[in-house]
Image (cartoon, rainbow over all chains, first blue to last red; front, top):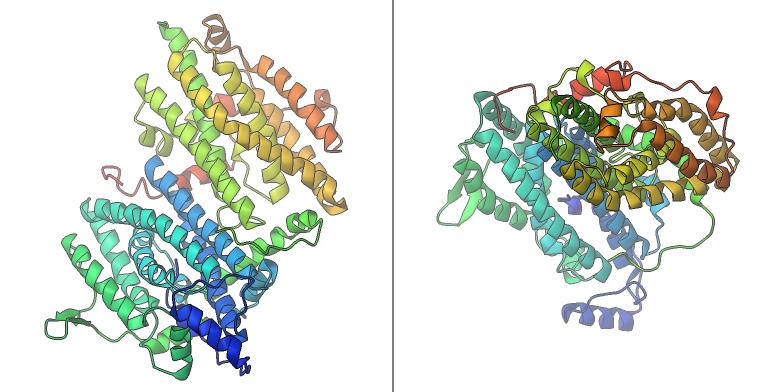
Length: 326
Length: 256
């Protein structure tokens, strides 16, 4: 699950590229060619790609934590097995993505070190707690739905290994969405306790969902380059609008109330209007001051430390990945 | 084949053993999800945990056919003293060396047990375990590969694997506690019994342990951790069951 990654963009590297090669590269991209690991690419393209794919991979393993804690509490065999498989998929996505990023020259171990040292970011949404069983249902349905919108767009991008990984990820995510929706339907049409539980979860998660796609895009030279190189395929606002178009009616059909009285579709502009999310909070949480940032990184760090002896015992050679898993 | 009342009671004891061992260890192994030492192991442990819980679900369905409560209620709302799992599966996941050694010792036993049961006179059980055996081939292959690799990699990993073996053996031998009504199972061709399983298990795992370079203590001097098959459990089981049923018990009338 991933969304809103673009907000972590850094400034350009200032590299001056060979203008002939750069032109050839950009011509290829505009013709719809995919770039492969051994092809020439601008330094800045490689840097931005590593950052994007790495953040996406981190989001998958950190994203496994809030849902993972509910595997041991899932009510009944059907839900327990489905949630286990779902979270396992998310870890599998991290594996695919780290391998795609490794083709660009950064080893997995280094990426994970950057994650636990706070140097590299992950999707903001996972810094919020999953307080009840219904929270996992809302995450699996609506956060995964948001992730699919984001990832389907990005799978049309320019870097072959990332696009192929995203296509596979989206297929699995579509099952997560079905699982999440089924789970929400049972709660929303269930007993009073269940209905209250799922409404409470929607109330808690609406803000992180609106944050999920990132702040409104500000057109900059940097963004233009990202779009030209097909690293960025749609704006944050476009994706948020698409999500609202697809899911607001479905949420309302279930008798749930979206906690934003200003939410409405403007028939003239055909755009959704909503209470502007609190972007100050968004920035605060990204920068480490969210409800779960410390806990998430501490859990990840502990897992890395506890497993270090296993990884040391496997280090028998200096082979490195050069071929992506997909 | 028709079974009398006493034989059916013994059959249920056996099915509870299978169901509870698989459910509780599957539950324990699922606790590694997102926390494994490497991503590939995280994924592998989750797959095996899913298989185990799937097997458990099947055994609970068989019990339901024999008049026991429906699977979710039976698994998620039964009292602790009615569980028939061994102590080995109840222990927390601990460090990875413990979880891996438990996986190795337990899965070999279950693989052999499934083999013995694949000729059972209780056909629903025989046909189910024939399928499960196919899955378990990969579990034991996974366990054997890792035990060998980690026991022979470096001093640190060797030491950790040896200490895991020493810690696990009394618990592992507790898997073979005699079942209530075992002679009835044997006489009716349902299951040939835990002692035969124990012997086959020793024949299988001892050479693997030795070829991994680990030192095997004298099994005759080890006191097995018995009690589980009679409903006497470690202090670890109750909190596990409380956690497992936390949501299920919020509203007993609800469909989840």
